[in-house]
Image (cartoon, rainbow, N blue to C red; front, side):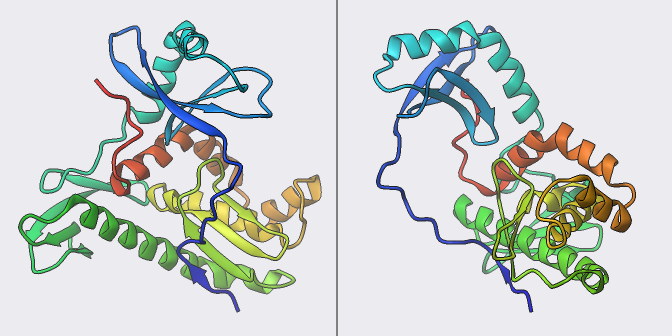
Amino acid sequence: MFNFRARTPRVASPAAPRQATLQATLPDGRVVDVLRVHHARARGIRLSVTERGVRLTCPPRTSDKRALAFVQEHAGWLAGQLAHTFGTAEPLAVGLTASLPLRGEAVPLYWREGRYVRVEPVEGGIAISHPPGVREAAVRKALADFYLAQARADVGRWLPKYLPGLPRAPRDIVIRPLTSLWGSLAPDDRMRLDLALVLVRPSAFEYVLVHELCHLVQANHSSAFWDEVDARFPHWEAERDLLRAKGRPIKAMLRALIDVPRARPAG
């Protein structure tokens, strides 16, 4: 029988790459933080943007001057990537945020005074109760727990109809924010699903679940694997295309709501 888990412990690597922060200026004058990482295996300088922010991976001994010059050379590209990723990601503002993304919709949000922090569905939307002077971190944590409960409910509703056609059930299902993936299935049948999937339309979330379940039959992405997906979820291509097109903005939206803000461009 499978179990749901919210997260897995993270163990810091003793050989973690050396990191520092640079500040670069975009063509419109905004200043952005760039996480510079010196990596022993890097053979060149690489600039990337994810929902976590801007990352510059450099070979060892790359100077600050050279690293910053590389970023400025690509400032136009960087501005476009930031607009794509963070254009719709608004940080949670206690008492001010008027709606929350859930299952592909912007759901009205109602703020209420209460003795403790609580996030719950109500008629016509979502309500967040909190005492006066509540810490923003406490509200974000409660919202993350709410999203996790909603995601668990969705998976729990969909999973029973697919299990009869599988050789076995997943050993474990972990739902938490993921960076580069929407889901994965480990060799020991432990499944991971991205918490951000609860923000998109339900059919896209269900597709990812089916995709990972099909790896219990075919542990690859061969034509036989896609036949398994197609047999269970015939319209999967539209959902895959949606996630490919909107992936980074969706992941950034989740982190803007449940993480302490640190990855958004300044200025």
